Amino acid sequence: MLRSFYRRLVLGIVRVLTTIYCRRYEVVGREHVPTTGGLIVASNHLNNADPPMIARAVGRPVVFMAKKEMLAIPVVGALFRWWGTFPVRRGEADIAALRLAQEVVRGGDALMMFPEGTRSRTGGLGTGHPGTALIALRTGAPVLPVAITGTEGIRWPSFFLKPRSVRRVRVVIGEPVRVERSGRVDTEAVTRATEQIMRRIAALLPPEYRGAYADAGAEPVPSRGPSATRAVE
Image 1 (cartoon, rainbow, N blue to C red):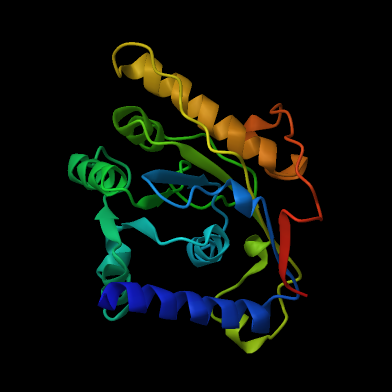
Image 2 (cartoon, rainbow, N blue to C red):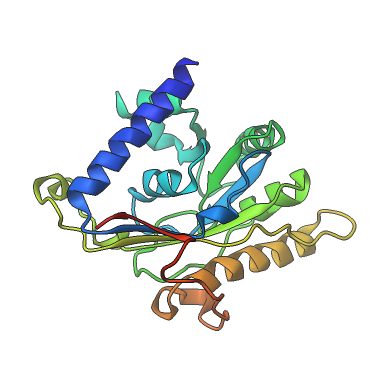
């Protein structure tokens, strides 16, 4: 109960901040989000602001994985833990984090992951790491591809001193996809599923953001209409 209240409070704060600091915050494809059941939200990653921006767009409670160093920061780490965030050791196979992630999804919650493993320094989509695909294959949960643009222009902490400094943040949500599995969850299956997930994300991005997946075909995404919610003008 307390955690649910805390999450609603945080998302309320995020709404206020986006209203103050973004000239426009737009969500496209929100109707694609399953309202119940285990889910993996997979997105490109441009800025530390991405998790709350995407969580607001998804519209249902989302659990995060975060690098262990972030959870060790006084106060900030505690705030993340209260949300339900759990640590992961980057640059190595963190078996404990993978098990926790699987428990989250199997328990019926939504788990947000950034398959690139870190923020893009160029704005282009980087090569995917296997963790997201591995969890999807082991749990059978659908993957919700998400593309975010505009947050690469956010600079901390000067961001808070310049209201309306971010021109436009756009979150595009694609249709859920179940990764292909035939037989064992081996290296080949994980590699194939990773490629499938990354290409679905790339297809939602403008061409200049597709990076390593520049040849991915674009999905037809309406720029306006009933599926596009412009939350901030």
